[in-house]
Image 1 (tube, rainbow, N blue to C red):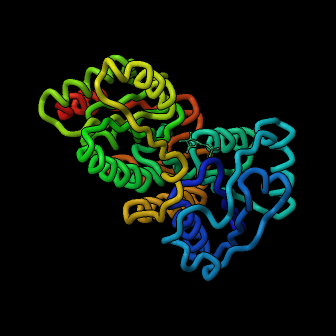
Image 2 (image 1 turned 180 degrees about the vertical axis):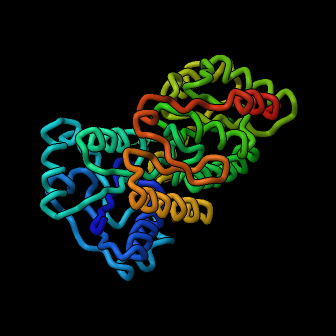
Length: 323
Ligand code: F6P
């Protein structure tokens, strides 16, 4: 194998640049040429492919986002789109591809693999909802950004005896909300895996005040059925009867924009290098991830067929510690 390419796809995640750097420099260390594909699968289809040398990835390990750009690319979900991408890769004599991204991106990797193109995935999404890696690139940094917000909101919540609701990212998965709620000492956590209807959220806050707490912090995952809008509407409607009001902060994309913390830089570096080693061994059609402290390779068919679940003990723990 002489020429490989790397792309970043889907929602960006702090640490993607560290992964690109690791792929490039590990590839070069094997005597290979490494190329970057811009704007994810969209650039793959149009052949937007540039050479990347060791110096091109200098000074990026500490940068958030992705120097290659990323995209969600509906055209790539069609077979024609994928054929076009493979044609472009072959025109550039690319013999192996590293795809840095989450669920949607690794579904794309799997499709390329099934069409015979050698590909290895790198587990990267702030949502931590990707089967095959117990933690993914970007999660730790995103979690710390959410925590900083919660800590700050708790201060003002205590001053005013107010309830605050913080909505964190996580389209289908409550991992970020659960962990931010545990680490931030929330009074209630609302996630798709353990829904809490608005009246129960209100009860939690009410009881917290009765126990002498000065603040009521609710952390909600954006993917929960009772999301920020629904909870806010309920609290507005019942403000008088409840005796307290609720302020809402939606963190949104702020969580994706940070500079990667040490954990994500190291995780991304290890997984990125692991993906290149896998390409060298011909272990393609797999996702490089972290499990029990080791870099592992999980077949992409397993990755796309399985859903990562939240540890129920952590959900229970959150409830106990909120008291
Ligand atoms: O998948 C990562 C993620 O940040 C989700 O938490 C969120 O729902 C989604 O991406 C937002 O996507 P977009 O950046 O396309 O709005």
